[in-house]
Image (cartoon, rainbow, N blue to C red; front, side, top):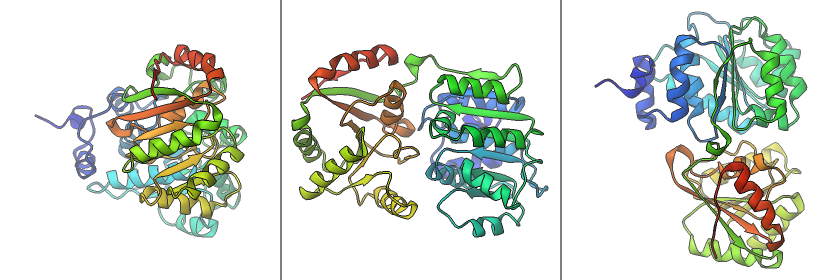
Length: 371
């Protein structure tokens, strides 16, 4: 029987590149969008959570659309953070292990711009970039986008909530000769809807799940009634019971994240804190240590945790509930990636019970109480 990805229309040389990566069976989003993107390849709006395999969903079709004989930039993928851009670049490179050489450059802040400009002098067919760095390099005349045929906006809701609206508009304008725009977003606030109307034709293919199916069903959602003064003790007990599990702890404020980090470090736990005063170099160092499992737990605020894509995280703890419903989806989606199971636990101050009920209603979830 032919390979499931071949049945979707993916060429044999790219399918061969999936095998060593352990990608054998398409996820729902891949099965929904790959045939359309390969066959029609027109405008697409797709709702997809982090960890659902969306990089392959847009990456495999994009690689088939690119002409390796042409040296021009034909595809641009925009990601909200440096970490995600690098991850996408690495995945696209791995997919092409057995196919014609396609050159991919990742352009993100935190890396020397001169080196990126020099790399762009070589043939480059696909660019994966964060919005700010891409525009900086265009200003320096290191690249231009008038040969781009396909624009991919990954995690569009994150890009906009990080304040890149103006930059996105410029990129959309600079790629106006493109034949298609593929937009992926976990949530669809009004700003994302406005963006889709401004950058696509009148009839984009839409693959949306209703809100109730947005949250990954492989995650078990729990809450524990816990006054503020008892939260650190509860976390310590939780970590004691799971010495081999790694995860994320979300705090609502920078001060809260740093305070909790200090307390846990003093108690001897291998944790670190991602907060806004860190330089890119310090942030990279922390993320490297976390990926290599030298840190058991990463403590972060919603803004700083954007773009954390680490497989095999067993749990997400919510020191406080987030300000917005969408943030709960983003937070909890950091666990149970790539088909694995995960745990999301809210440390609930008894006075916040009604906020939890609102989350349950809006996301179609049911939180079980734990101790």
